[in-house]
Amino acid sequence: MTRNLKLELAYDGTELHGWQWQENAVSVQNVLSDAVFSVTAERPVIYGCGRTDAGVHAKGYVCSFTTESGVPTGKFVGALNNYLPDSVVVKSCEEAPPEFNARYDVTSKTYRYAVYDSRVADPFLRNRAYHHPGKLDAGLMARAAKEFEGEHDFTSFCASHSVPGSKVRTVYSARVSEEGGLTVMDFTGSGFLYNMVRIMAGTLVEISEGRITDTVAQIIENATGSAPAGPCPPAGST
Amino acid sequence: MTRNLKLELAYDGTELHGWQWQENAVSVQNVLSDAVFSVTAERPVIYGCGRTDAGVHAKGYVCSFTTESGVPTGKFVGALNNYLPDSVVVKSCEEAPPEFNARYDVTSKTYRYAVYDSRVADPFLRNRAYHHPGKLDAGLMARAAKEFEGEHDFTSFCASHSVPGSKVRTVYSARVSEEGGLTVMDFTGSGFLYNMVRIMAGTLVEISEGRITDTVAQIIENATGSAPAGPCPPAGST
Image 1 (cartoon, one colour):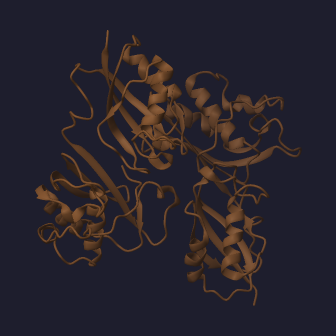
Image 2 (cartoon, helix red, strand yellow; image 1 turned 45 degrees about the horizontal axis):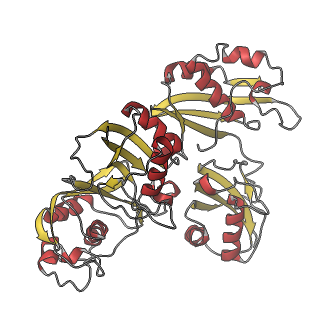
Image 3 (cartoon, one colour; image 1 turned 60 degrees about the vertical axis):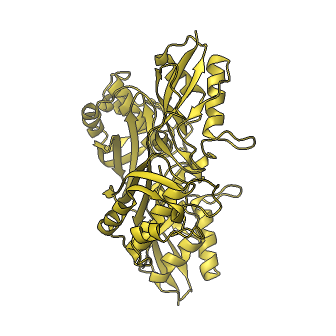
């Protein structure tokens, strides 16, 4: 009997080349496909809820695949973790309805970008958060972030070499808060353009610094499509 | 004029081969010596407060060296950090009296070993804390740890291939607490035998599990020197 399984993963993307299967690099899909093969002797297509870039981490990544295997869901977790590197962990496994597909059924995604301001960098945060030597104003950033919310043409917030197509996206929420010494920016939306989350995060940092004086609403409004609004900081957040 | 400088470092030891200079591996002393050379064009001996093993991290490691350089202490921090890898950070630099030597003047050291108990491992803790699938009893571990305190012959708690010499050491405090989902064991003492901290930590975990039923005091008392008391868990703590 064909079963449809839904997995929830967590991964530290520091040494991984993103989610997507790659011929000559180690991605999450590569190691997971190998682990599924080791457990089931099958190589189903594994559908993921999104493509994360190299260096991006995940705390609750959902993917799904079909299998003829009879291994109970409770055993799948430990069996897959046995074959996965320490950087990728299966947190749970459950039976999903036959029509469920983690790629097409995703309704919202939350991306987090973390920054911290301190004179000297913290070596323990080097792959987790962006070091910003100047003081950040989380309150100001939170107010600016609010203007990302809603349905907008985000042309000003995508990589200049991004693929053609509509740049209209809906951001359900954009929040900035302080958490354990970090300034975290959480963006939830139906989907995001290429590099959009990083450019939104970089723009909020520049606004806090006073280097960008336009409001987010003005930047969205003035979309020229010629260049992104803010800088694109490095990966390393969830 | 010869100056004596005292540095405080933090480092993520995951990819480093410990403190000690090595011919064919990258250690903290190697990268720091190269950075000092880049800033001062000198290669002084750098005295460290202790030898940390490969994979061990540091939050406040003190070292010292002499220099003829006139670079002000305030500039030394940024200058050295410029040349250091992201995993090693100079937190502060100050002038020390000519007689100060970080290796010989150390009066106490604190080592932390962190463990966490959860069914599934956390990929973000893989190089920071030891994953223990069974439930840990921090209260029981804290009471057992108390018996490490004082001056004892720690023969039962050192690697069987450790160098000859007195195994008497003084542990000023041995504390177990819960911190952000981790069970942390902090050991402060004048000095520790080879692998002593890891074996003490492993012993406390085994006591919590009920796999060791002797008390710590009994284990110290029954020192045979033939084998360590508990297992020696991997590095990855501060």
